[in-house]
Image 1 (cartoon, rainbow, N blue to C red):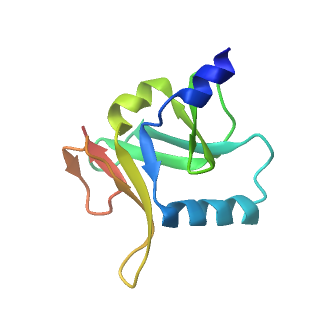
Image 2 (image 1 turned 30 degrees about the horizontal axis):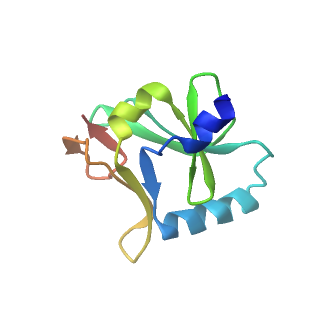
Length: 118
């Protein structure tokens, strides 16, 4: 029954097509083990108070699991409050290259875009 709840739970975040393409490429290049998913979260630190967490990891008891555009996403339940409505994008331009976090809950962000204050 828990699997059914997990499968129907709406994701608090979204991934753009560019982010999905890069994540699938990284998943294959890094030979991520079976059963791992994309961990999205926050941690204390950074120049604005919180830093984003983005990487491949195993699910823990503290996590909710979501399917976002075919990507399995793990997020600690307590992080949803800070990340609700966030979009993760991939930029590949002359000035910027990498994942970008568009978080409507961020009151302040740093210049690098990887930390925020809520």
